[in-house]
Amino acid sequence: MTASTWHPIAKLFHWGMAVLIAYQLWLGWEAEELPFSPKKIDLFITHKSIGLTLLLLVFLRLAWRGIKPRPPHDANASRLERGLADWGHRLLYVLLVAVPVTGWWISDTSRIPFKLFGEVRVPDLMDANKESSELAASVHEFLTIALVVLVAVHVAAALRHHFLLKNDTLKRMLPWR
Ligand code: HEM
Ligand code: HEM
Image (tube, rainbow, N blue to C red; front, side, top):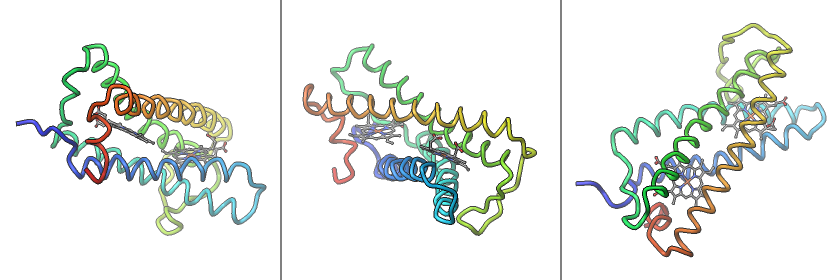
């Protein structure tokens, strides 16, 4: 039998990652604005550390989704709506992997050594290379903006289900339900 609501672990991944991503966006933008200073370095250490944690979390989340498949779509949703929702979610997952990977690429090709949460040295996979690091920074920025836009569409879709279509799509994802 398929469950009609999201498993509590799936909700924990969803909302936990949403909160971390919001913090992560703030950290990235705030750190970029600051002049070179110990505060800027601290913010970037936290940004890189939370970013790599998010990369690990998305793989755990996908593994969990493999074990416990998502509940079915709202019965009244058309084929087109189901398709849009499924492809929208797939694209979100692609960006949830691609954004931290490109961040790691910037960090790996820059000359700044990086320790996860200031403790664990992350091994360098590539040689330091200014051009590569700058390209990575542009791709990271572009993909981050794509993620923000897609999340905005995603939130609008969730609110449409709740307020216009008046179905349970949003309610069954809420943590307290
Ligand atoms: C979901 C994960 C992530 C999000 C949402 C995110 C978001 C951002 C944002 C908003 C910025 C500032 C503006 C921009 O260049 O886009 C930024 C910059 C940056 N991020 Fe991330 N990031 C993530 C993961 C990572 C990871 C895992 C690393 C490294 C291990 C990283 C390293 C950097 C660096 C080095 C910059 C400065 C780029 C520059 O010099 O222009 N990020 N990130
Ligand atoms: C950074 C923020 C967010 C990200 C990255 C995100 C990502 C996702 C992803 C990938 C799924 C699909 C889950 C799966 O099929 O495994 C999902 C489902 C869902 N999200 Fe979000 N989400 C975010 C924020 C929000 C917010 C703020 C809301 C509410 C206003 C929301 C409402 C929902 C709902 C209702 C579902 C279930 C959709 C359905 O039943 O088809 N999300 N989210």
